[in-house]
Length: 264
Image 1: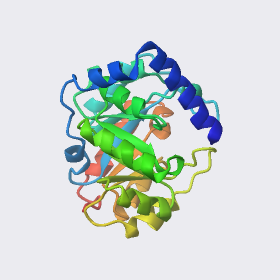
Image 2 (image 1 turned 120 degrees about the horizontal axis):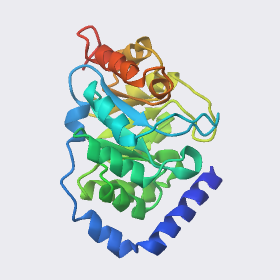
Image 3 (image 1 turned 90 degrees about the horizontal axis):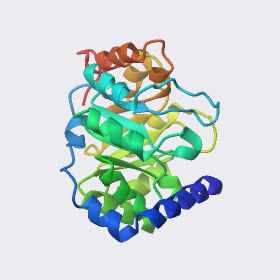
Image 4 (image 1 turned 180 degrees about the vertical axis):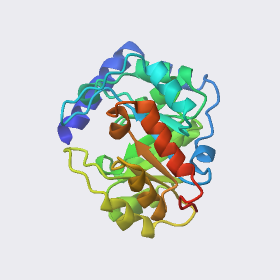
């Protein structure tokens, strides 16, 4: 885990050497208004966030994505409520340019998927069109975590606290976040624990928006999360690895919007 953070900070330092912090900060405050992610997450049923990424780090699987823009537009056309774009390069082969291309192709809110550990990255996220910034609670000391939440929200973006334990969920609540993402995936391995969501959500206040991250392969998985109180699910691998990703996304979106889908 320390290697992941060290790599992220090394890459941030290289980008900051090209565009100083003062400059990226000024750029971030001179952008178009953010799109309303809260509204998109609170639609009736269970909203679907489709994550676009080029590679799975642990298996090495690479997805055949000819055009990030076309992929994002296609997922929007079949009803995705938000689009997430993986920008981390070392493990996922992503880039900020991917994020920019996706943002320009869609009207729905965008989430930049990366390991955010430095204030510089928050300003970058806004410059490249992010409306939502995920923060991995387990990687951040509480003071840094709360500072990143405040900085994210000061730029009009929505901070999502990604948690994997009840203790991390408590830290998220202390930071005052409105949105919690319960991640079923380990950061450091390909271990998947779908039970995380059902174990953590009962401890969250009713006003907290809940996103289930990871573990949705078929409509039944989405319905299971919705039954435990998910307002939204974030899905990447199962859609991107499908023979027809757009159809796979459309099927899951339809499941989330079906009258039989549990909804708060």
